[in-house]
Length: 152
Image 1 (spheres, rainbow, N blue to C red):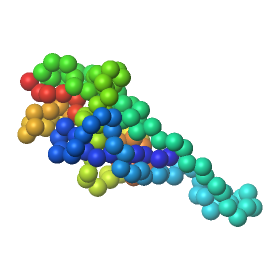
Image 2 (spheres, rainbow, N blue to C red; image 1 turned 60 degrees about the horizontal axis):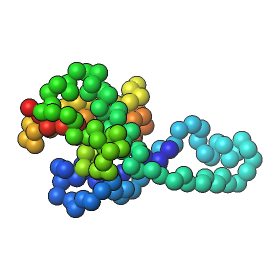
Image 3 (tube, one colour; image 1 turned 45 degrees about the vertical axis):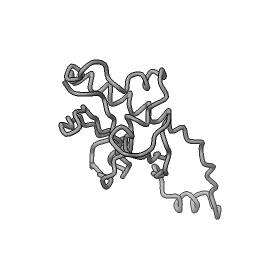
Image 4 (tube, rainbow, N blue to C red; image 1 turned 30 degrees about the vertical axis):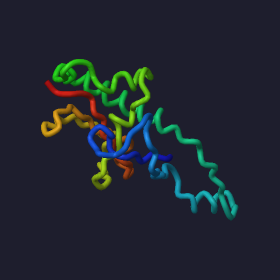
């Protein structure tokens, strides 16, 4: 399963930004049996995997939806000064998801026994409510930051 690697959210960096989100790489995580064991079981000498087309904007919007929904469920959206900045991108009204979503630059964290990891935090230095989303966190997958909005 491929996981896209994005730059940090453009709003918090000095990167040039236009629209959408920039894909700078990917990490592929293997789930299921070991490929060598499959080769032996099938009595073949190779397996061909056809790469799938990546949809980085859709993936980033999904991450933002997860973060927004989690913040709503936790009741922390009332800490925002107005509407969430990422909401127009989630709804497809603006093509600016790269402003609000990006890959965490820190080393990949692995959490045993925890399928997905979600965290909310206040970045007081920049004045934002942010979320960290890590899907399949027990499998060395990347984490993503989502800027949810400006704090009051």
